[in-house]
Length: 336
Ligand code: NDP
Image 1 (cartoon, protein in one colour):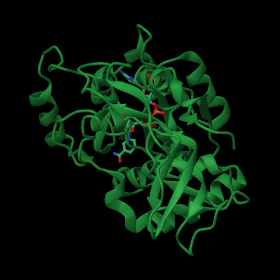
Image 2 (spheres, rainbow, N blue to C red):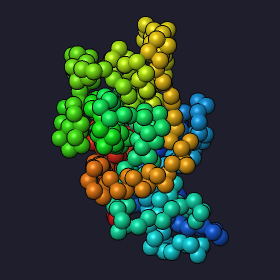
Image 3 (tube, rainbow, N blue to C red):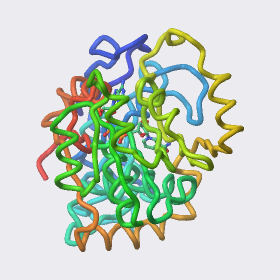
Image 4 (cartoon, rainbow, N blue to C red):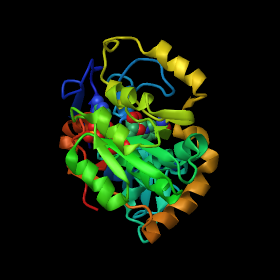
């Protein structure tokens, strides 16, 4: 059983010295457990947080332990009546080829209803994040302007399409011309600007002639700086992620913007609220009902970026933190 462990906590960008491949014996399921062969392994930005010892909303991965993460796999041994060999399941197998899981902790998937990979993408955690963050905190109204950063990624692509369904003007921010083209041409965004362009701030302002009512924050950094000045009175800002800072090992260079921003929060009566998707578990059935219908009828489309082989997981994860992925990033660990 090949697996990737957190050998050492990274400072800055993680690499193969921090995330090491090792081979272990095949695990064996006990009573009430199943053995799952990983087909797809999800790579997500939160995993960078799990590599750090800093206190957060979830426990860090211990040094020497297998990196954690959601997986989609096939049950190859079962000691529980509710799950049969051959069933496809959503599991929490981590970065490895095989994982023992409590039968109660996995969810059966119906491959006839949707491609199984979508259980960690548009129909799974990232899709749910977009759905609840926008609905509960963003609360977009028809005619308003919604801006989303990391617009071509797993969460961002869904945020923009839901905002279109709600009748908003949607402006994406992404880090490559092909990503910007993709979200406009394939997802119906009204505009998308590249934050790496020299005149990014002017482009963003032109794309938002009536200001910004909802900013779905995925990145922080210079994108947040540019958005700040365009926020309207009573704008809402769901703070979903800050990926531009996940590899920071010291405070970013000044000037300190906090005093100015808090002044804006007051004067413009902004609502800035961080959220973690699992706090909204009670909305999961709403999400499943709406998102499966939208995907089925084509209102929500999605792009997956599938990297072959567990041995390429570390490079792929680095790419996620550098914008090399095109859509929801997955590793294909075994054939479907
Ligand atoms: P994506 O598929 O969007 O991939 C990450 C993208 O982030 C990259 O492709 C890159 O796109 C962008 N990025 C990387 N570095 C920077 C940078 N320095 N500045 C601006 N953009 C950057 O990932 P996800 O959709 O899975 O996640 C998006 C965000 O949502 C992350 O911040 C993540 O932590 C957060 N999240 C939060 C959850 C919650 O419950 N709060 C749950 C799930 C995700 P580009 O080319 O555009 O730079």
